[in-house]
Image (cartoon, rainbow, N blue to C red; front, top):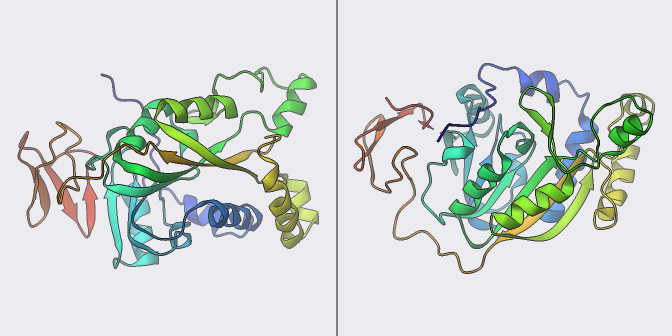
Length: 294
């Protein structure tokens, strides 16, 4: 099977230029509200997919352990500097080959990440495979049927139809998805949709320049509850649960070899060695690297 392409933020200054400049205070705060409204507080182990530099990690409250997964090792290094190591595990890997035993997590999040997936169904299937029965999954996705896209299409200023269920790739490895398509993918991956919120209704540059962030955040907070009625915002949050009959991980199993699927990985000084295929995966400066074997 051909490996899908992966969007790589290695060496990127994304955290600094996109979030730390303060120009996206509004988006950051409304996403925090959505997380607190939807995500269950407390649990044994949470997996943060596409963790980046750990912008959202502290918002996941009262979990015994949080695993931050990102394809870019440099982003995980920034997260380490921000968060430290106590209670956190840092993993460099791609979502199409998750290096974890089945049912090892009771919660997972994927925020501002699915829009980089050329094969979103395959990615969601992988998430479902590592969650135990009833485990919560908080997903955010870029909404193709947002108000701006609808207006541009009606005015014939864009070619693609926002009401079509097919994904649209507006720049390389950046996709917008139709809400109905995402819901169908979640169901096919074995998830039951529990709640939805629409987020970032006022993600318009001129509005952010003339209206104080606090006012936009307050208005957005009120509109988030409209998700069951209409979804025209650029961002949608969905809380789902894994099928109840899925078993938890057996024994002390935690890792799974992304090459052969074996659950027998032995900890060495600077590597994990797979007893199934013999491949060794680097462990350097507290980061488990499953991108390529040693």
